Amino acid sequence: MRTGFATLTVLLLGYVTACSGSNTATSTEPDMRFGHRYEGVPPDGYRTVTISVPEQEHTFTYFPATFDRVFVRPELLQLEQDTVAVEVLVKGSLPDACMELHAFDQERMGNIITATLQMRRGQSHVCATARHPYRLYLMLDGGFIQGHYTLKLNDSTIPFTVRKLETRE
Image 1 (cartoon, rainbow, N blue to C red):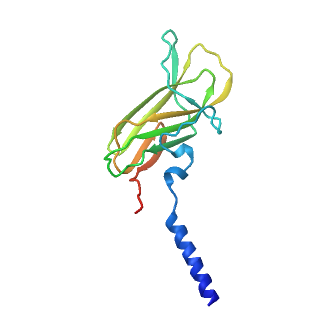
Image 2 (image 1 turned 45 degrees about the vertical axis):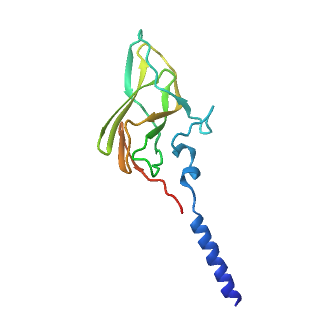
Image 3 (image 1 turned 120 degrees about the vertical axis):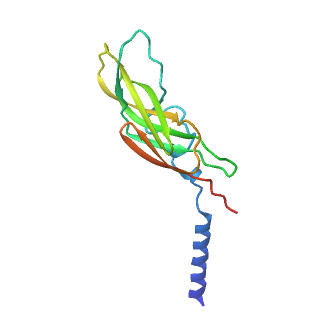
């Protein structure tokens, strides 16, 4: 009788735990959440930057931007929505204090987004080599329906999925 009661208790606890699940929209790390931004200096030391317009009087040399990680962060697709926005968080390091992010260009063909991220340095500048970590938030053009996609950023390929928000009844 006691073993039957203990077994029943364990099964009920397992069932309740399995059914409670977790809300992925709130339990994932901040870098994976659509729309999340850090105020001030983030714990990982990657400071938020933007792409700025270069000064007209300088001549620049352009390079493909270097980056460490790319997080593709689709908005959760609600039942009443047809499409959602998708943002990209790029975390990388500029090789010296003279480098700046220059441009982000993108082209979409079906479920493949081909993008380039460039950085620039003034041609007459002499700078000490020092790693400058950055985080850059970008929006992909257009709306995205539920499905599988591929982002090709410079030489990296990043698959991602747009999912419908799961509801419990």
